[in-house]
Amino acid sequence: MISNQETFHLSPFIAIYDIVVPKDNMLRQINELVDFTFILEELKTKYCVDNGRNAIPPIRMFKYLLLKAIFDVSDIDVVERSKYDMSFKYFLDMAPEDSVIDPSSLTKFRRLRLKDVSLLDMLIGKTVEIALEKKIIKSTSIIVDATHTKARYNQKSPKEFLQEKSKNVRKTVYQFDESMKEKFPPKTTSNEVKDELAYCEEVITVIENEPKIAHIPAVQEKLNVLKEVVEDYTEQLHFSADPDARIGHKTADSSFFGFKTHLAMSDERLITAAVVTTGEKSDGKYLQELIRKSQETGMEIDTVIGDTAYSEKENIHYAKEKKLQLVSKLNPVITDGIRPKEKEFEFNKDAGLFICPSGHLATRKARTGKKNQGANQVLTYFFDIEKCKVCPLQEGCYKEGAKSKSYSVSIKSTEHKDQEAFQNTEEFKEKAKSRYKIEAKNSELKHRHGYDVASSAGLLGMNMQGAMAIFAVNLKRIMTILKEKE
Image 1 (cartoon, one colour):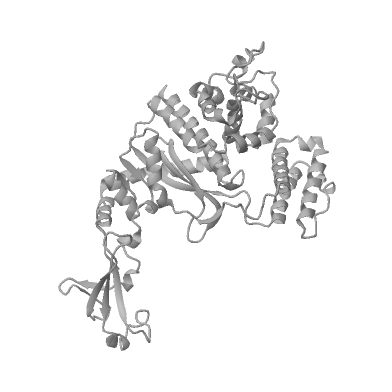
Image 2 (image 1 turned 180 degrees about the vertical axis):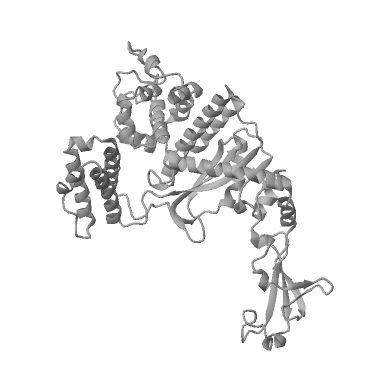
């Protein structure tokens, strides 16, 4: 049952907070900046209003998840810290003497209360709303990019995955006490997963029986991860592959297994929209959605800045239709072609035909493809095959036995011609310099808020992780800007 959830507990010890939680404490500032009752409004349909036991306040549960995102810790560790960290208790609207929740409650809250809530859009919208009210966002441009997150349950076998986690624990333990090597059980020699699972459970037991080691924070963190992995395995999670994760490519030579988060960010470095997808999705396909979502938060946009991935013809057309400047370079294939300079044929303007390196003029040309539909049209030039058969430069140009020799060039669309002209202007080059800002934001998400690896399995879990991490970085950015204004 949910009732009077926003009421603060009366306590004779409340005054302690004024002493131990200073005004410049980040969590105190967040409490003063954000009215968290919007969470209550969003979740009230998830609770019974007149029956059953009083539930743990949903605002408090939400704040626990926010603390996890801000400090990048496990469920167990965030609850443990809330026992003794007065800034945590203050942030959670608890009296100093209040007892904390059971860590398992956080898992239930995520699965039962947040499952059907559009948390990502809601939390981004809330932070942008605050920024607009505080007159922080003044720019009319957004920067777009995508960042990848590796799946928690990767492509390793279940046995390999368990081995990796138990090894991490042992290595951390040895940093403090090498004599523990004699106390750990012998490693398994079988290929049975159940044997590896039993080994992990023994490792956990050995460490917990050594309080001096078990209570070291660095060991605790690794141990808690191993515990969660063992528990997840007993609940039949498949470590060999996250069911929703996919293989994506960062470059031609490197790939990852996981998810992508497509982001839009204002020039003030506030994330204004995000879309979480599986790893194989193309960046450019989500530009229009990011623009729409950013506008729905109340932002006014006249410029969109991104890398080459966003200069698809459909996006150029969309930007033109919406009267937006798209600061995104065309793919070099469109501007420069796909051939090396030494293999390019020369165009004869008088004849209107191409000439091959041997000086032979094409005999005819043909146009393929439909205008203004999908890919650009192509002009194909045909050469006299009999001359090619005896040409001294035929190596790498003419294949013996071929029935024809042709040379094709793409016809640039009007959109591509206009975009190419724009990207050569000083205005384009100046605005493109802002793109580095979103790369720095991606780095912040990954290295300070644990966004490099998924904290749970599935696309739903990734959406929730993204929502909390982005909410946290946006709030921190708002507070930084407000502090600079003082």
